Length: 210
Image (cartoon, rainbow, N blue to C red; front, top):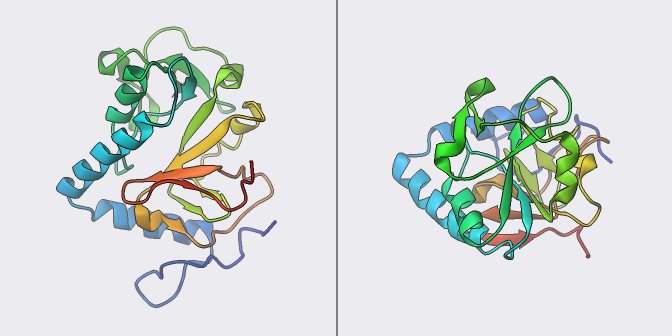
């Protein structure tokens, strides 16, 4: 696997130079997201909800998340999962370590949480609850064609995804230009099986032969 200093191949940073570190990639993606107009965000969120709604069968358990800030999507994709008959678990952030979980029962069940996020009210489920999930939908700033995911750097998902079942599908949600050819990778990075992007749909990633 590549170290975090390896060259990432993808869109340049506006000065003709491709980002070469995770920090540079994060800065670039967050800047681009912040510049996206509200109408585009809304259109993308609606399409993401449609795509996610087709992802899980009735009776499936899906670990997902509540998009916040400039993240693509909305709670519309959580509602689409529930309307399709899926059980939806969302992260609850407590002490540093793997994420705890709470069951989503609609927008009214969410309360303010740390870091400007929202999470389900009630007693949280332990981190091991992720092992009940058939699908884990993961936030990402970018994903490359090998499945390497760029997160925000806090490490919550790095400490969590190893608790998922071996056959659980790991799916990240990104904007179309955030699916890139190559990102820096570290040994602890957990690769995604697929991404959902509003213009590209569900994209299976090259490394996944299952």
